[in-house]
Structure formats: C-alpha cells, structure tokens
Amino acid sequence: MSKSIEELKSLTTQIRRDILRMVHAVNSGHPGGSLGCTEFFTALYGKVMNYHLPFTMEGKNEDHFYLSNGHISPVYYSTLARFGFFPVEELSTFRKLDSRLQGHPTTHEGLPGIRIASGSLGQGLSVALGVAQGKKLDGDKSLVYSLHGDGELQEGQIWEALMYAAGKKVDNIISTIDYNGRQIDGDTDDVLTLGDLHAKLEAFGWIVLEEKNGNDLEAVIGILERAKAETGKEKPVAIILHTEMGYGVDYMMGSHAWHGKAPNDEQLETAFKQLYLEAPADY
Image 1 (tube, one colour):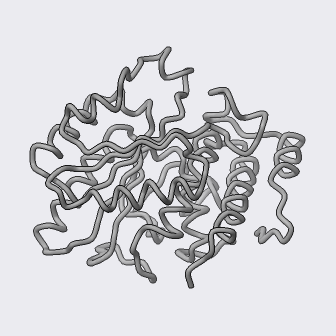
Image 2 (spheres, one colour; image 1 turned 90 degrees about the horizontal axis):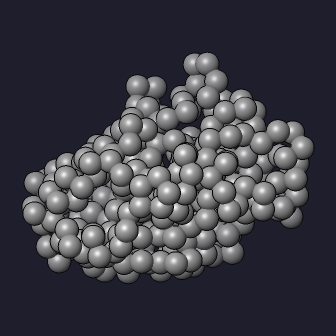
Image 3 (tube, helix red, strand yellow; image 1 turned 90 degrees about the vertical axis):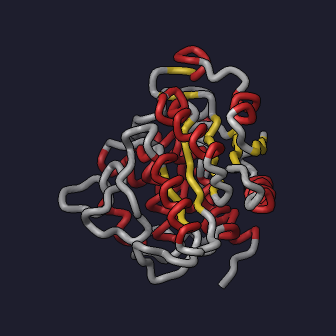
C-alpha cells in the first residue's frame, strides 16, 4: 500500500533511529553519510522506484538500485527492512558474526535487495551502466538508479564511466551524487576539490539536475521525478543532491567527524531524544 508523505516523513525518523542503534550496538559503522541520505532512500523506495516483492536477483521489468558508496550500508539495510525486503528484527545483527548485514553490502549470503557487493569506491557506476545496457538489450524499459558519494568522485574510474555513459547514450540511468561536502579525511574541498561539478558533468554529456534541499523529503521526491522525465533522451541523467552529513542529530552535523564513528550510550540517548516518534516502531 502506498504511504502518504506524512507516513514517509515519520519513516525517515525511524530509519535514522535504526541507523544510530545499529552502529552503537557494535561500536562500528558509518552513521554520518547514512543519516544524510535518509530522505533519498525513503523517497526512492517509498515513492519513485518501481520494484517487486519478493525480491529476485534478476529483477526483470523492474527498476534496479545500486549503492556505490557501500559504507553507508546502515541506511540501505534499514530502508530495505522497513519496506519489507527482510524482517526488521534482522537489523539487530548488523556487523555481527554470521550476519547477512555486513559492514559493506555483500551478495554471498543472499540478503534480499542487494545485487552487488559494494564499498570499493568508484565501481558502482560501471556496474549500474552494465545493468542499464543489459536492460536495453532485453527490451526491458525499466530504469537503473545509482548513488555515489562526492568524495568518491575523486576516483578515476568514475570519470571513465561518466564518459562511457554519454558516449554510448545510456539514457535509462539516473545517478545521484550525495553532495555533502565531507569525506573521511575532512571537507571535500580541502582533500581534493571537485570544482564546478555541474559544469563538469554537463561537459561529459550528461543531463544534470541539482537539488539544494536534499534533506527535504518532498524536494527529493520532486527531483527524482524530474529526473525520470529526462530519461529516454539519449543522454544519461545525473542529480547533484546537496545533503548534510549527520542530518537530524545536531552534534553530528557540520563536521566530517561522524563519517565512521559510533555514538556512545549518552550520545545515543541524546540523539534519540532529537528523533523521538509518538509511536515508535522500534525493533
């Protein structure tokens, strides 16, 4: 059943609670980027993407999503669970021995929703392009979505893939860049600036859309729907989505410090007070 905007907004809060609890339980993981991308995942799986359950690896005649920056697995796992791919209770096994929910997504344990192992940055766009071309060969008119970190764009393979996509007119792909301006070693501009990313992507032959309010659920839904309308025009489509790392937890915002650090007991309690739900559906 389709959820209302208000229901989806409440779900983003629940997903953020999931993220924090998961990384806290094992004192390991990447909460910053996960919290920043929650609206994107909720919009994608809650309103925009066409997919079917139960999950099948082939996913013929349905949209696919590929997470390239696999370290933000907590938001991915929570979203999949909350949208019915696997039991919510399984989130409590995150990063534990024999868990299907590894720190970076893997396929060998057969976790529903996961089609590639990811985490080695720079590879996801190449995979997504291969799937997009495969769908065209199969006469499958579905779309392929991918997500990338802005720091990930410092990888050379990304730019080869960007050039390939335009050169081969792969127009059934929508690639979103989580542009939060931060990466593990500091601000992206300090580590290796991306310069005028919008102009660069256009110069590589992509249709480029940009959304400044990447933590506004309705704005994210809107930009994804606009992107869908731009597919099929013999050009790949990119979205530059401006988000805030650690969004929703005040002490995590405005810094790269929480890229890969878990909150302690006191910090978790503080965060939960900020992310309170009237009727929490906690596992």
